[in-house]
Picture 1 (tube, rainbow, N blue to C red):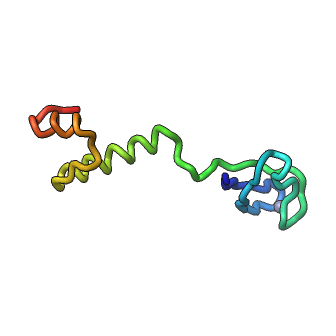
Picture 2: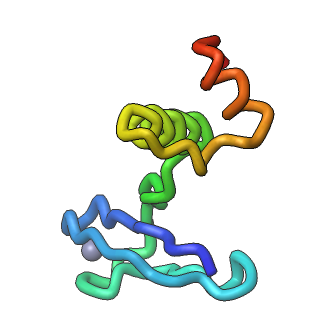
Length: 85
Ligand SMILES: [Zn+2]
């Protein structure tokens, strides 16, 4: 279930809400001032590129500590030979 953030330009209120099944359940008015012009703010879910960067950073950190379980068998074999992936 996606979590959406909304910003009300009228009063500056910022809130987030869970949206169940489709756009017809999205809030249409500000819960604080009742203004109808809500701006959908950027989701907190990281974009795919950022997730990949985090995943690679975690793998590098784990490898530096001697943990290779994040890598596939083929990747582990190459790492143990001192090759870069
Ligand atoms: Zn408002």
